[in-house]
Image 1 (cartoon, one colour):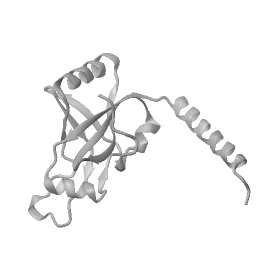
Image 2 (cartoon, helix red, strand yellow):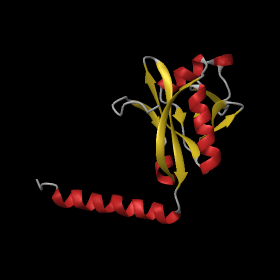
Image 3 (cartoon, helix red, strand yellow):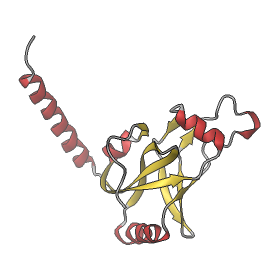
Image 4 (spheres, helix red, strand yellow):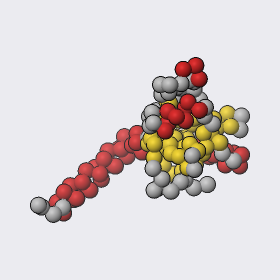
Length: 155
């Protein structure tokens, strides 16, 4: 299943994932959350840095995803670092599990957004970058920035 539209406003993005990994495919997954966690995400208090997904017993979980406790949540707040269950079709999970095990790929959360009031997580099937790949990507970005500066009209 393909990821969501690019025009959907993102609550949080994992920019470090694009620096450390090649994103081969993206998938959209629902997140099983509690009410105070949803309120915290709506305020933008979610951090995807250093998060990853794993598949255990035919279920997929997002680990390392930090959702800050809701200020007005009192006793209903949950552990900010608890593993969050992701909601995907069984066939998709089986396919992802096979690719992760056979090809040595990784599942990384890329962004969080809302679709029709429901929190969604964009999960990327990723391959790790080597240091020379990271340097090459940075060099391309710097070159493009220099070109844009040179072609920008002077005021």
